[in-house]
Image (cartoon, rainbow, N blue to C red; front, top):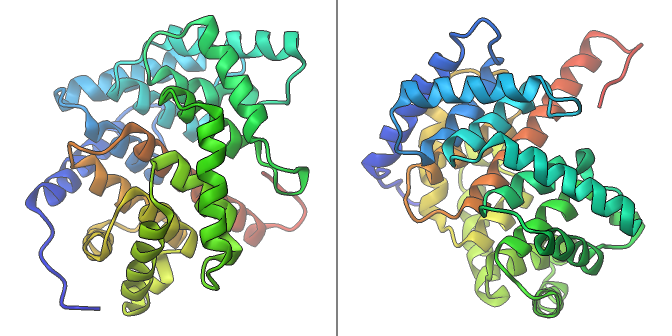
Length: 320
C-alpha cells in the first residue's frame, strides 16, 4: 500500500462523537452491550441534533419498541431505535408499515418476509409517509428480484427490494442493470464467484459495472498490501464499497479508524463495518441506503461473533 494519507479531520471528529454517544447509551439501566452501543451510536452520526437529546430519544424509542409484540429484540432493538432517532422516523410509521406489509402478504399469498416484515418496513420508512401503492410496489419488486431457492435470502431480497422502491426504480430497469452487470463479472476471473452480489449492488447503487470492477481491483490491491486489512476486510465488503464508489483512500481511513477503536470482542468483519459506518457517517453526501447497508452488514458479523462465542463455551446448544 502507498504511504497512507491523513484522513479528513471530520472522520476523527465522527469517531470522537461516536465514542461519546456509545458511552452515553451504556449509561442506561437497560443498556446495550458494547458493540451494540457503538453500532447504535454510529447510526446517530447522520443527525445534527444535540447528543443528549439524541441519546434520550433513542432510549425512548427502544422502550416503545419493547412494548410491541414481535418488535425487534435485544441488540437489534437498539440499532432500529438509533436509525429511527437519527432520521426522525416515528415508531408508529414503522409499526403501521410492518402491519400493512403483513396484511398485503396474507392477502396476496406472497413469499415470506424477513423478520415478519421488519427489515422491509425499516427501509421503506426512511422515505417518509407510506401509501398502499408503496406496499404493492414492494411485493411486486420482491417477486421480480426473487432469486432461485438455492441462493435465496429473505433478508437480502427484502432490503434490496425496499431500497429500489424507495428510489422509485422500475423493475424492468433494475433487472436490465443486473443482467448487464452480471455479464461483466461473469467474464472476470476475480469476480466470477461474486457475479450475483456484484450485479445486485451495481443496480442498487447505480454503478457502472466496468468502472465498479476497476475500483474493486484498486481496493483489492490496497487490501492485499496491508496485513491489517487482509485480516479485517472481506472481498464481499470490497465489492459493496466499490459499488458505492470508494477508492483506496477509504481503506486507509478505515485502517486508521480501526486502530483507534477500543476492543469490542467482535469479529474482524464487524469492526471493519463499524469503522466504515463511522467514516460515512462523518460525510454529508452519503446515502441512507449505504448507511443502512453498513449497519446490516455489521449486525450480521455481530451475530456470527455471538454464535462463535457460544459454540466455544458449549456444544450442547445452538443459536441463530
